[in-house]
Length: 223
Image 1 (cartoon, rainbow, N blue to C red):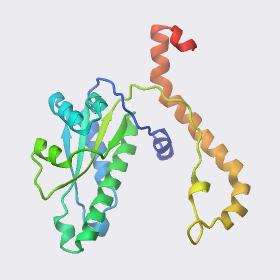
Image 2: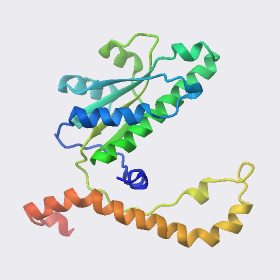
Image 3: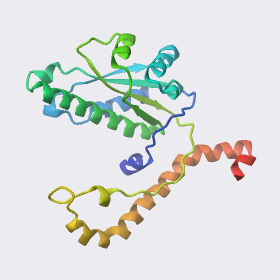
């Protein structure tokens, strides 16, 4: 899958199929994750793979996100900041650790698309309870949990552009150059994004369309 396809076809999924992920694919995705940029070229991210149903259920209950247990794989993304502390202040260490974990997590989410997998990113949970459950040492920070699996959701087609609204020039909230140049490229830019979305939409809906062909259209499909 091309990079732009991966980026624009990534969705936040809360409903996964009961389908295992082969380790060959999983570790290929993890390698892509660990290839992410690390502040000061000091990798700090460590990941715990959770696949047993009992542990997935417990993590789901702790986080308050019941849908987490439907994912065949949960990746608990942690940070061991020991080496960062040798070079940076405590404030910088915490910031750099989070940045490293975020970069790894984003790479994982995008790499998962190579195998037609989707993901979800959860950061609101009791770090202390997760640490106790998985025997994570106190010195290790837990930054987020990634749910990975085959999507069991149907996605509506979306064409969205954010670059103009969220980008400034030279200083905060300055759009003078954007006001001059963006109208000239807006049509081409939107056409480009729409082309990608059309391509992505076909890939996202292929499993849904196959299901409809198998079971036939129901009343729900005509609503």
